[in-house]
Length: 448
Ligand code: S3P
Image (cartoon, rainbow, N blue to C red; front, side):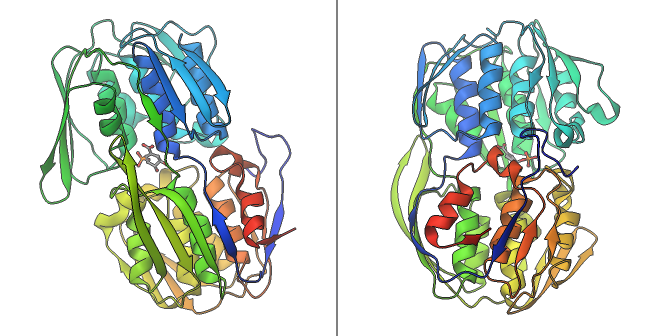
């Protein structure tokens, strides 16, 4: 799986040792919030205006699916979108299969939204998405009354989902910390009478809960145990259209931030980075490693705080990252492994089992990325252990496996390694961070 389904031909690129990175950037809008703004806009009555939407392939596929299900979704300017919704349970049956491309989030959240409507829809995606487990979402949706047809082993795509005419509210304990599972159940629960409850042992990102409240739903989130949450949603609300300002994506900010830390003498500023505490595990970890990251608090919007970050080149040291931090930085381990490679000493990242079922098997892919570039790394059970030596030999060719974050992490590594780092295909970067290459070049990154 080295070629791009989305863009056709693979687009290889090489990153090489660059001078200090300098400048000020705003990375694109948060992917999680962008998907949710379109889906909730489509389930609301009236108009939703979104500014700062991430116009990456993943989110554009969600926009198309909302149109196919009957909502009016229009682009009104750069990153500005307008959605006229159909109301809770108001989706129309789509005429053609819904294609989510590379996006697990778009696919699984829309499965939840469709499960509460009396329509049937075919869900499909690219080779990466077709290989990912969908049973984790289909199990609770079936308990709520949805029916699945033509699913492959593990409920893999393509499959047909028949939504429930009279969905049932359930109480569901998620088997793994996953905002996608939680969100799918809550979105289906919108159409059910009574209270739908999701219990999670480890709290996952809460953008769905915050945005549901912003759109007028009655939803309560309480602490559960030491790290968990219990979320209760009262079904059949009248959601009203709302304005959503999408802050910059901390998972995208992670790449220029780690680049600035590992390239000597760098000094960069990132504006409007979302700082929801369920997303900031990477920043906590980098600070523990000795990173110079100054943060000035800014206003928040619809419950989502944001801040400006100033990041300077830093000497990093190895640390141990506890497993309970994983949900708050689940998409950041690849680029943390890059930072750990440049650090002095050993970094141990614990409890990474969920990395095996992302856009690729990220646990194996991270180890491969480091190994081909001369870094000593080991996978022990679900833990990743990186031996930092203060510099990275580089010189490797990294296989992307249709995974945007592998491509960006490897390119960041090449900006400070002794020899250049090559990436076989950068096409998938367009799923989440279309301007990554030009934005990094504007800071001084050297790619060819
Ligand atoms: C996301 C949830 C996470 C994350 C993904 C975005 C979301 O997935 O990895 O990139 O927006 O809900 P899981 O729910 O599988 O942990």
